[in-house]
Image (cartoon, rainbow, N blue to C red; front, side, top):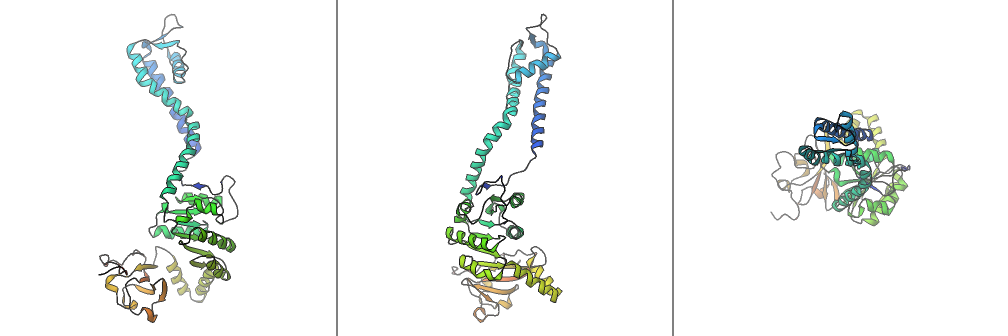
Length: 365
C-alpha cells in the first residue's frame, strides 16, 4: 500500500470493476449509427420521392438533393414544411419508419450528455446494491505483491471475487484490482470512514498487507475497533513488530522479510529442501498445505495412520503438532492440517471419502 494518492480518486470512494472500452471506439460507434440512420432515411425518401411534393418548386418534384435536405430537417425536427409527403403510403412510411428513425437519431445525438448525467446515478444505485449484498466478505488492505498473492490464493480455493473488497489509495493498485474484477475502496485504511465504506463491520476476514509496519499497526487497531469478531491476518516486515501487531488485534501475523530470509537460507544450505518449501508455498502445482475437517471414519485414529500426511491437528482453536501426546487419538471437532497432492481439492475430503460426513462435535451419530 503506497503513499501516493490518485488525484482523480475521492478518498473512501467505492469503485466497482467495469468493462473498459475506448472512448474513441464508443464515439466511432455512435457516429456510424448516426450516419447509418441518415443514409437509410435518404434512401427511403428518394425511392419514394413521387409521394412527396416540393412546395417551393413549380413542378413539385423531389430530387436526390431534396431527399438529403428533407432528411436532415426532418431528423433534426426542424420541419420547415417546404417539402412534405402527400401520398397516403408516404405518410404511413413517415409515421411508422421515419419517425422511429428520427427518435433514434435524437437519442444518439444527446445520448452522450444523458449518459454522463445518468451514469453517476446508476453508479450510486450499483454501489448501494453492492453494499446491501456485502456480508461476511473479505477485505484486503493493500494490493501490492502480497495482496495480489493473497487474493489469488483465496480465489483459487473457491472464494468468489464478488466477496472480496480491496482498500488501497494507490492508482496503480486500483487499476490492477479492477483488471482482476475486484471492488475497490480508495483511501487510507487507517481512517474509519474508508474502512466503513469497505464494510469492515460486516467482514468475516481482513487481510492487511501494507508497505509499512506502522501503517499495519494503525490499520489493525482501526479494524479491530470496528469489528471485534473479524479474523485479522497481517503481514509485517520486521520480526520485532510481530508482538505489537498482535497486541493491536491481529489473530495471525506473517513476517515477510524473515520468511523470505529463511527460505533463502534453506535454499543455500540445501537446494532440495528449498525446492520442497517453494513447492508447498506455490498453489496448484506439486504439493499443497491444506486444512480440512475430520471425517467420521477417522475418529479415534492416530494422525499418522490417515491417508493424508497430517502435520498438525487443530483442537479447541489450538494447534498441536501431529506427534503431540494430546492428539494421539483424533476426536470429533478436530481439524487437520495436511500435505496432499495439488490435484486434489485442498479444502475437501480426499477422493473416495466424499460420502463420509465430517465428525463435528454437534454430530450425535
